[in-house]
Amino acid sequence: MTKTAQKLWAEVDHYFDRLIPPDPAFYAALAANRKAELPAIDVTPLQGKFLELLVRVSGARLVLEIGTLGGYSTLWLARALPQDGKVITLELERRHAEIARANLQNAGILDRVDLRIGRAADLLQALVAGKAAPFDLIFIDADKASYPEYLDWSLKLSRPGTVIVADNVVRDGKVIEPDNLDPNIQGVRRFTDLVAAEPRLSATVLQTVGSKGYDGFALAVVIR
Ligand code: SAH
Ligand code: DHB
Ligand code: MG
Image 1 (cartoon, rainbow, N blue to C red):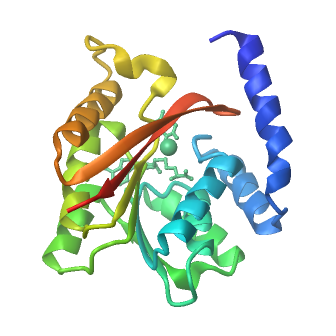
Image 2 (cartoon, rainbow, N blue to C red):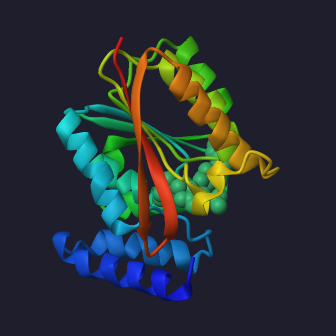
Image 3 (cartoon, rainbow, N blue to C red):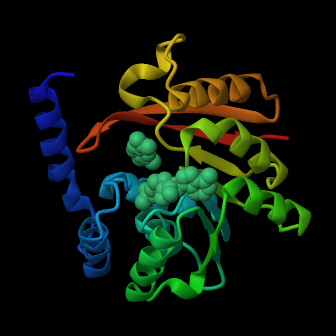
């Protein structure tokens, strides 16, 4: 992509930021994540708002997030929930989880979040084994190489009507490169093939541009 296009995408993102009422806890979370030198791969504010709206339109009460980082996306998901709603969010790195916990606490929303530390695959297996209630919405955003596996677990933790969202399925357009050996690319390609072949899912992809560059969300609904 050209540099001018990236600059324009970022400026347009910032123009539309006026749709988002300023919330100090959200700014503080992003600032804390940068201060802690977490990778700057949180969803953007407008993407976070998109997640909030998905929670609202689906009427979700129980949300699963795979990949917490500093909890910025978790904040958006949790904020949209009713008082008795819950986000279970899974994170491999203890340090990321600790920063997320502080951010969620600071936003006064930690009581709606169940933050679990470990390999997502293990934590997902435990959720299935523990017969966790089906989730209303699932946000997949951890290591892209494991997206096929996360899709599989997500289906086991779903019911008809469950919304499944996966971040970063376009990756600067690299998703169309069949011979790309990057395991992240292979993961999203395999994920896409599995979604396409899965009769229980009805799905689409929204390509996105913005301050984080060129990427996209996969959006699927469990239909049976
Ligand atoms: N959802 C966050 C960004 C997540 S970044 C946001 O938008 O704000 C991806 C996160 O997944 C990182 O924190 C990384 O540590 C975590 N992760 C990577 N591999 C994982 C695994 N196998 N199990 C659980 N979490 C993992
Ligand atoms: C990466 C991961 C993300 O979740 C994201 O939103 C952007 C980039 C990455 O691993 O490169
Ligand atoms: Mg992401």
